[in-house]
Length: 376
Picture 1 (cartoon, rainbow, N blue to C red):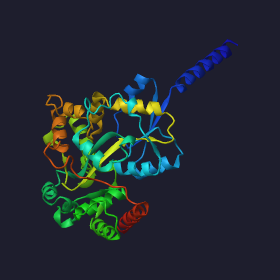
Picture 2 (tube, one colour):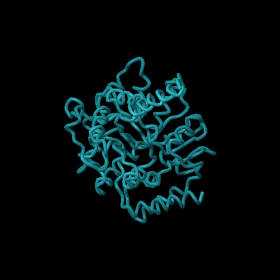
Picture 3 (tube, rainbow, N blue to C red):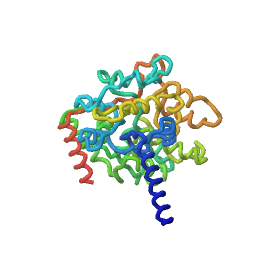
Picture 4 (cartoon, rainbow, N blue to C red):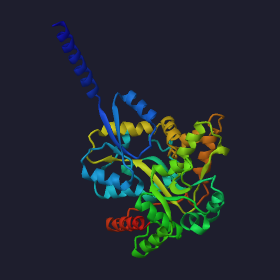
């Protein structure tokens, strides 16, 4: 009887414990992989006594399909600029209440000029729906130990990726496994806008992609393969390169001894990922608290220190590039790969953001890229 009573007490205790845990408010986020500092998330959970659940998607198109289907109701999503445009046009998002964001302050906590530039160029008409998260460019990440490859990339830019004769023999090459990005890269190689929407542009892009003898297609796998010496050249986010760079620096590898680097062409893709709140979100107030938390300069600094992409905030950027003994390599890398263009510069950021293309044309791009993959 005593044993039975103890078991009943234990069951009651466990039930109460589970009920207590289950009573915490939950915030459900859809994010890219390896795109947030888990320590920052933990600090938010502790401060607000909530649980944050993060699901992953590997493309803007997957973000869209998940939000449109409504199978899972997310409270926050982090798509890129052209997909925000599409989501707004399809009435899938709700406006953000900026009065709930105490850290959103254009005077005392401003965004970087490049962020404002992308907002003006690509977010015109729907800035009410977004809070900038990370931004940056795409580039050609390469293996410095592959003899002759660094010179080829710096000399021929896109040509080193698309033309076999312009890179060292037996160079292992891969492409980012998102059809929209592959289409854009091929058009940029041909000195054309990545936002063209014609059958002629589609043919030109296909001809460019067919030139490459691929060692594979990938997303996060590309940066890791180059960092590990298993791949030589790939089209990736600049932040992917920096993610691998920071890992090496933390492990004690000197900047001079890092075996990989990235070349960022003048004509490349610029992007900005932003927080948005789906129309059907259930925890809207908590979503605002999460965005506001990541607008704190010290949290944005902490987040960027792990993720590798560029913070949108001036104060966080200035903290990163401060020449402290502890973070000299990080400061150097940020200034080199995410330079702030001068006030007199006619442009505020490097590269060209992707536009929201017609759904039928996107289907043509998907089909074209699949045909390229099948032929290799």
